[in-house]
Image 1 (spheres, rainbow over the protein chains, first blue to last red):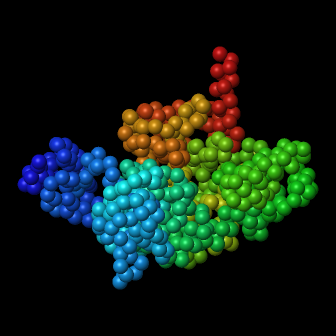
Image 2 (cartoon, one colour):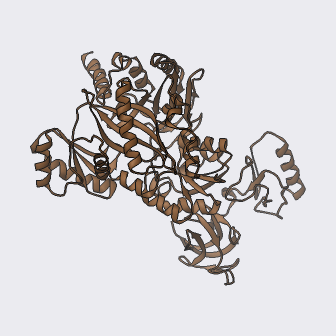
Image 3 (spheres, each protein chain N blue to C red):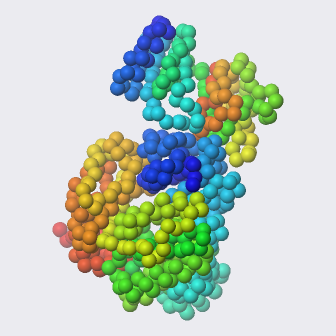
Length: 162
Length: 454
């Protein structure tokens, strides 16, 4: 297993090289580093640190024009991402002081409202497309999201909607 | 001046708008469907937002998604380019309601000129020659039959909500009229959502001459000369030039005055193009007005030195036109060839991945393109991959520059119509300037005859 220091070392090495993409796979671990050209995307600053791997302690990525992205193949088959079907602003609840629709650890069923994506003053309720447990909320409250942006990571149980 | 403009388009025109914004110091937002994720307009814009899956109706035509993208990026204006939502009065209204400036004329003017039957009426009311035809939409078959026999065959049935050559039926004699009306209405309903059709006298093989106009919000309207767009197939232009070999200074003056008259009477603002048909006897008739920037705008830019996209942005930002009619000078001659991803013989679209891509250059050569080596030409959008424009001090120089440019333009991995363009540029009638809207059909027939005879 790669240790935190090794990952940091690796990222420093890649950053100073001319590689734009780097991928490494070992047992139970896969790491992919992609260099993005300096440019904003939905207001998400490229300098935000992102965790690197699926197994082992989270790495601390150096703030740089690089993001470490988890590769889909490394995910177990029962992990499902709910993606935004529209462009807009993501809200965890119906109002600023209301309870969030869901929290990490909650069990949800297919069709259950997980969040709101607001566009043009219309509050669109986004429903879960499968039964499961909320593992992670991927977007911060009030952040803009684009079409296809992953919003929630669920561990599915039973049939998944296609 | 605007801080940030969202470009509601894709491909070469999206890049073109980004260039103008960069020159003006304006930030840009690109929107894209998942099929365009790796496109150059996405890469070169300051920000980008994915707005939907590949189909137009789910992405580039989805008003809610486009506006939402402008909201989350805090864009203060939207440039619609051409096609897509560029002539949607509804979209322009939604922009206004959301306090986002739409870079184009007002919704009312878009609506007026977008209804081709109403636009004809407006032109007639302004004293501009229009083709003999119905006053507006024809409501009954009886009305159509009466009118058609008065106008005289051949006539053409056109969709009121159509344009760009779609939703039309040519009727050569009285027996064909009723079936043609029925077919055109059905097509119009399906394509444009409105079954209304109007009638017009049909000119066989006229020339298609269009005038570029610009109007600001202070009532100043100028024209930037004409473009000859007679080289068309199925009403799709593939080669345009300026000036037209058919226009004497006197005819140019009369036509440009007609163009200005209509634009002024409509209170026209921003960029627009008035299309005319010119018959063999030098009579011209108003056909339709396009309330957007056009694909072939570079031709006018090359002979006037005026950046039309920058002017559009400046006008929309409330600036007055920086020049008067007498300041506009035309020099030289320009030609544009639209390079399409299509089989040069069958003319069917040829999507795929471009492997080799080499562009011409040198004096008087301009390329507007979003294609590049290894880029995928998706099947979802139109097949134009590049515009090749040449300028010369005279028409012959523009032609010879275009010929030598086409000879070295290499596009591999897909088929293109470059061979067809080379045939056109070497055709004796083209070189003599003997053009009309039947030119390309005749040229294509020649090849078939040659093949059949061999």
